[in-house]
Amino acid sequence: MKKILLIEDNKDIRENLAEILELSNYEVFVAENGKTGIEKAINHLPDLIICDIMMPELDGYGVLHAVHRNKDLRKVPFIFLTAKTDRNDFRKGMEMGADDYITKPFSGTEILNAIDSRLKKIELLKTELLPGVEGVQHFMESHLDKESLDMLAEEGKMNKFKKKEIIFSEGNWPHFLYLIRSGKVKVYKTNDNGKELITGLYGPGDFLGYVPMLEETTYQDSASAMEDSEVVTIPGDIFSKLIFNNRDIAQKFIQLLARDVSEKENQLMNLTYNSLRRKVANALVLLEKKYIQNEEKAKAISISRGSLATIVGAAKESLIRTLGDFRSEGLIDIEEDGGILILKKGKLESMRD
Image (cartoon, rainbow, N blue to C red; front, side, top):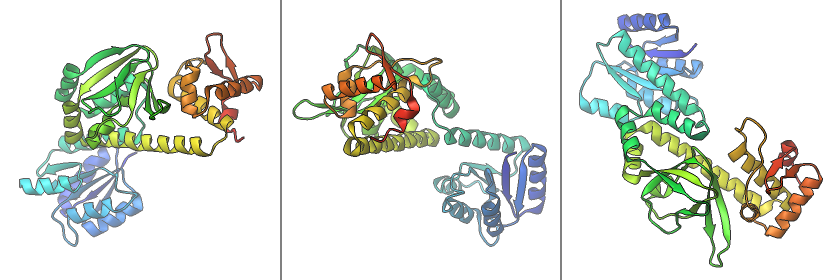
């Protein structure tokens, strides 16, 4: 049962609204002023807060400020209730981070719809983006209005890239957001001697190219198809409109940015400190997680030894010897076409030497 905190100084409104919420199967906590409301928020950690603006002791803006300063409460959806309809008051509340703004008098249906909408969105933001194109579609449909979805469908174009074909190049200015529909794509950097280092691996449902658009800089990496791939290109101006006009979309891309940073930090630690065996083991686990784990049955990893060597950061010959050792130890099997089938994932994950 979801918990809702109702902070309202008007006794009649407070009791009537609490009754409506309880009849709708919510657990309701009430407070008659902002100070008491903050205390109850900390004690009960509600799933959503409904708060009046004009109250004694501490007004709604003060409550919202206190909520956002508390690490346990800052992500809780916050809905303002007010009899004031001045646009400046509305903007002040939204700029401070309120999720919705309902004016009095309101109907029970209106408040229940607002609550349902906010609780659904917060649940979506708590979860990782579901894997694959279906996960992206589900996320977009949950967060975009019909006009935005129609705009994406109209402006987004499907492009086919052959194996090894360049999707974008380091140093160029970004013009598109890329969404992989099928296939595999690698993102890499090349030094002055032409040596390549793979900095990211992507598959169906993954976005590419959003970092330089957000930073308004050129591409810091290049991207190419590792196999025949289908990629949807979304014009940069459409992406910008979605980011700046939809807070939920912006927050999801912030989460993607944070994940990318974390993955690159782990990759750097792996390249710098781990033994060759552990580097190869980590690379195989990463590839299995990225491309294979959602398959219904075990499937071999299809990747060239050269590409795998650039992920590991080792010479191709050294990589091949290590794969041979893993095969002899029963950790992997190597199929006739070169595909690598992981047999003992747990031992690869826990490898220390």
